[in-house]
Image 1 (cartoon, helix red, strand yellow):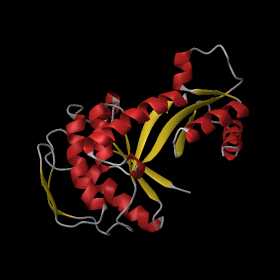
Image 2 (cartoon, rainbow, N blue to C red):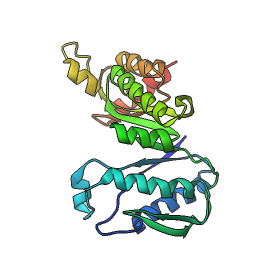
Image 3 (spheres, one colour):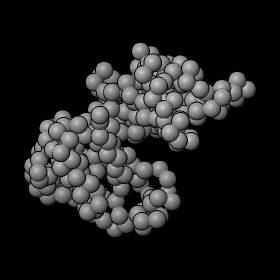
Image 4 (cartoon, rainbow, N blue to C red):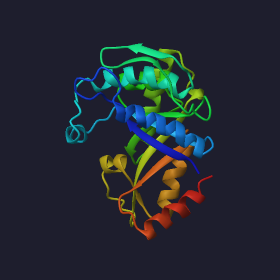
Length: 232
């Protein structure tokens, strides 16, 4: 079993240092890695849904600028470095460190990215890349090619990075009349169709699928579990 932790890295209005929420989030990740004995995957992202920012009074401007600065602080901290000092436009730290130190210096960092700048940041800092929410493996293949180009641009070997996908799954009777656009957005069908769809992602180089069921019931969970067992 893997334990995942997803954090939205963004600055509070007027902040010139990572907010307590963000610092504490990464400290918790380091602490949880001790409890989980090295099974934590740290998921990071700049956020995209403005109502979530508005609900907590967090500015929605320059989110990628803030994310890049946060990465330059978070990356050395979760690798166990001390004395982390950074002076940026949005964040500042001086001699920062995490205590307790992370269980290991190589806690995997997963970043979800789609647009060019975020793809380059992911290629630079991440151990795993995620694209979501999709249903057709063709979308994954297209986006993976764009990510590969970003890796080449920053001089990173794609083979060093785990490729993952968030797949929207609708457990229902297969509908052959679905439009091409609908198929791109979600994987639809019964157990056989889901097996074929998941197998396609694996064959395309996707190492891990984060599945999102449109209808979460004991039955749909059981169908997904059976399908996953048949993926070779």
